[in-house]
Length: 214
Image (cartoon, rainbow, N blue to C red; front, side):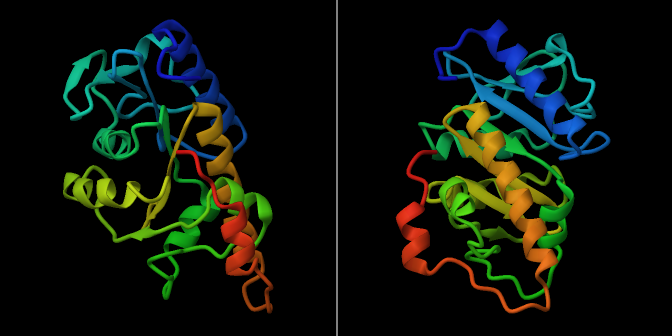
């Protein structure tokens, strides 16, 4: 999907992706939010308080790049994060934020490297995610995180919010969803391997596979 995709197609894709993430257990309750950038530059987002398992096409919200509500229900309270990523990454056309279990668990661990919270255990993680900065804890909806998120997103298409969960931008919603699922599986591997000696990819191996798109 690109920025020129029409709004009805974008709405159908958001709902289809939301259902898939929810039914496969990558989010729960009313957690998580998705967005896409429309051809007019506005953002189509899941609304506040909605479940990705039940949200409907007519219930999606629309904001501008500054996060100003344009129409539809009130957007997710983390709409500012989506807007920050789009401003930082002009080639990004989708953003996914989840509270997926294993990635959220990693975000609660002490002693994480703030510059890269997960080691590159697999080639696919290195290709789809790359480095994963850890942003300090802010309460959900706390917009004081916005400037830090925007600065970080200029150099990284994926971040992990401390005690919260991951946010990933992609050139398409499919790409962003694939990347966040890869992140969740790598977080699961990381937790399974706790207490074991691991052999992640070398910096050179990881750099050779690093993503070059949003």
